[in-house]
Length: 424
Image (tube, rainbow, N blue to C red; front, side, top):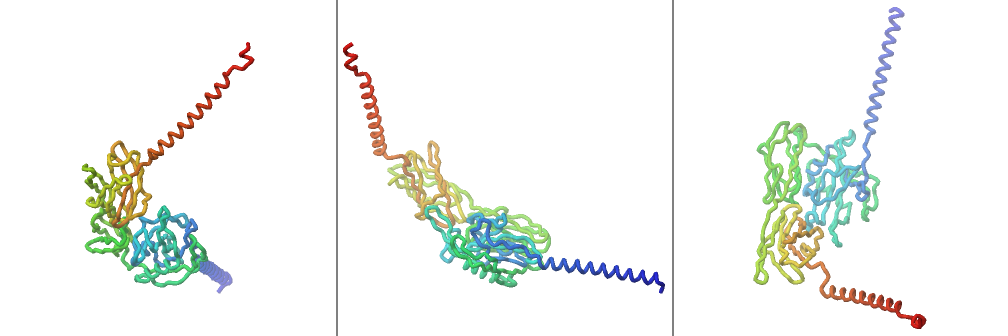
């Protein structure tokens, strides 16, 4: 082997070693970088009022978490806004106590935020869970009374499903008092499993009352649920669907086709129908018509009119959806002049009410939550009483007379002639 050929071979081998070394170094660096990359997990909501207490990893978009929360229902219609990293929550669910009511409670309440994809956490999401009850003093609002046992209830709900691969604790260093209630800082971390090789087809509802059953049929297969999600698993393709609508509701859309190309979702909006009913009531031998218009149903046979202490209209109303509205038309002929209004629902003052009028009628609007309620509307005069008016007028008149007398007396003193002027 010649000297030139030997040097050439050595140079080629040396270059090959250097290039392979650089490639190995780059690969190792990339692996180390990826393995060490973990997104920062928010520890509380942007307003600082709620701690993050649940972390979902593996395959855990918010819809998949919500679909597997056994016994929990959609509460978007009665859940206030809340943000993490500037983003609104993607799902909000509730689980009332055995004696609790939808929206009102006592209940567990959870908000879930999608966090996107991470190489270390997968398709992940986070949540804040709490237990609360309603207090009215006088405006009704929710009061937090616990963080940790709501977290435990959410954990139990997910463990009843078949998608949990593992459950561990994760310390987020966010222990402390939130809304005057202590949280221990030990978040629960779930690793969830994805659906099968078929793609998820998710139907999301909003507007139904708590635990109201609904159903979807897709390509001949029907599934029903009382939860806010119905999930099918389908191969890529185009499929027709139909929604089974509970009595008293309308749905949009109620049917159509859905294109599956990977995971896909379809929102179904349920609303209760608005109707007009008229109740005939009698008083002092006269008959009057009171009209009700809204998406809550009024039992017209229950409408009673009383003129004791103002105009009082009592009736029973039912709302089958999450929340409804009622507009009541009351003739001015049976109401006080310049009236003000008060609405009582199940004996509690309803501060959602608004009163307007024209030359013939008063129009009273108020909201009604899910369920059947006893309602009382009261129209009373908002002006001062006649005796107060007379007393006020007398006082004003007395002041005017006193001022006038004092003024006349002063003017008289100015024009009385002095002794010097009289002698001239």
